[in-house]
Structure formats: structure tokens, C-alpha cells
Amino acid sequence: MVANTDPMQSIRAEGFGYRSAVEGPPKLIVLIGMWLLFGPLAVGAANMIIAGGRGLLAMIPPILLFLCSTVVVYRVTRNYVVRSRL
Image 1 (cartoon, helix red, strand yellow):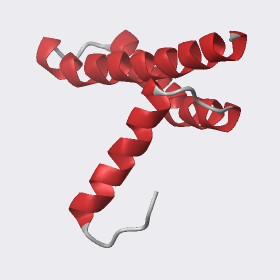
Image 2: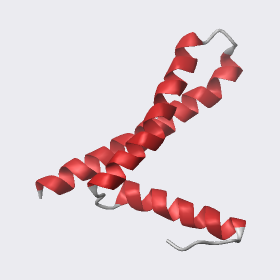
Image 3: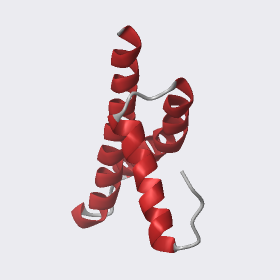
Image 4: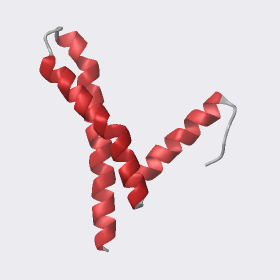
């Protein structure tokens, strides 16, 4: 990845890094990093969902955050486990 001063290029570079981690065969450090980034997000979103009580419309962002975080963690972990068996 390269350092960019342009905000749009920076967003694209960050997205490329996340896509590479989810789609490709990740290394152990990438697996740990993704767990450290998205694991707490999933736990925090789950706590917000469990606490609830703010109405259905207010629950949509925590539900989406929980789903996205768990999917990222699941896919990276699955790719790491499957690739390490080969």
C-alpha cells in the first residue's frame, strides 16, 4: 500500500487492504489485526442490540454493524484455516 494525501485515494487504498484480507489467503498477522479491528465492533454492537429499548429504527445501525463485523471476522478466519490446511 502507498501513502496518499488525496482523501479518495486513501479510502480506495484502505478498501483494497480490507478486500485483500477477506478474499485472499491471509497471514497470521492479518488474521490477528482483523480480529482486533472488527471483534470489538461486533461485541459492542451485540451489547447495543441486547440493551435495546430504543425502538426498531434505532436498532438498525447496531444490527448492520454486528452483521458486517461478524462476516468480516468469519471470512478472514475461514480463509486462514482453509489455506493453512493446504
